[in-house]
Length: 617
Ligand code: ADP
Ligand code: ZN
Image (cartoon, rainbow, N blue to C red; front, side, top):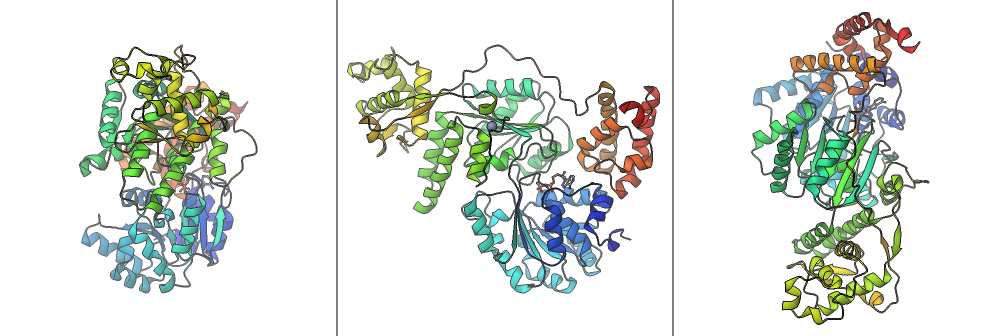
């Protein structure tokens, strides 16, 4: 029978069940608010610790806590991770057999569950609602609440109907959670979920452990390879691409270079897709090359990098996608390659889509904000946080523009020349051709079109063709040129005029030159500082892998890397010492304490250190 029934104090649950010493940020306030029956709207970045905000109240309040999530594929692992902690949890979704679903329903009726994860469509069918009537829910947690936003990238029709929960169960507390922070989406969530009386908790959105790099695209595959070889040998991470085909091509390329890379996209065979996701979650050093179909709710804590080989759709999307790295709080990298072709393609996508004008307008605005981020000479983090309405007082010191400041230059004349070149060639060409004209290239087509007679021909020899491409990219990003929907040629806009007439100044960014000499391969970052600690850490990892295989769960469900790191540093050799490790709660102490303590003791004997004192002496 359950160990859960007698908990009343959130701190005790935090310590004994989850094995954590303290609450983070607003967790404690949110939990008290829900425990006492209030509604809450929680905005917290990925990795901020949203789950505890509903898990602990569900354990404390009587009845079962209902967690609504669109992420059916993850429910199984979420529930198993809770079982590891001794929490009575289950899920109800379309992957369960009829018998299994009946069993879960019976558990609900008998008050044998603390938490149940349900897909929204399942929750809202009459049968489930009748079941809920009979078992008095402890709370409703609406996870990934931004799915109600029709302008967002993860819209789910069924989420709109969740507002009815409040009408049917007015006294049951509701908590809506999301990591998507922009103010339009916030408003939509409050309106559509009927949360105007809920208390809002907004956490700081900064993720200081993630280092941001946005670089100009040269040869993105080689750039990717170099990044992985120098920064992340043997790490797990995600590489995002725009098209399904490209994910396969890139994965193949990485495999040919000796890496363990797997593709993931919505067009794959469902079984294979699931298998690749599973491998990513469970094994070490797996790189998943995916479209944005991958990742919502992926809570693998030790994703060490997220790469974008193509532009994401908006700053929100970028922040959310990169936010999947470094959930464990250890250093992580976000790396993006970006070029004019991306801008052209995304602009064409928007204009060609069937969306109505209002929808297109929003998409354009979002894309422009993203381009601003790519082209900025200011701190990347500052730009992103200010987009979410948060003010970072100083430069962050942990993004490319902070680490290696980028200069800007007076590009007024260059922009003017570029625009006149577009004008003289009758707005029918793309940037590569235009750069050739400006530099007076021997490109045969120029002669064929008679463009070697233009004033623009050879009129921009002060810059190299590559530098002109950078000018074009930036003035397109600024809206001084638009992109032809059909052919991708560059066209003048209403904004071009002022620059052509010399009435407007243009500041441009000096794109940093790629580093020439090969950087030394980085030593794999050790979680623990000392050599001995490193050896013990590897040993503990082996033990963890064995236990994970036995229990058929991902390794981090047994213990996170950070817990193993703490063990390797502190060398706990008594039960008491072991219980003090972050992430060791009662159940895990019972289940795994002996095994790990034995291994640590043996290690200390063989290496002639005797636990805490020797290591710290
Ligand atoms: P989110 O859902 O907000 O992305 P999670 O709830 O998955 O984040 O939490 C992120 C990580 O932080 C998890 O590994 C979780 O166990 C850990 N965590 C959350 N709260 C605490 C805490 N108070 N102390 C230590 N670790 C915590
Ligand atoms: Zn910065």
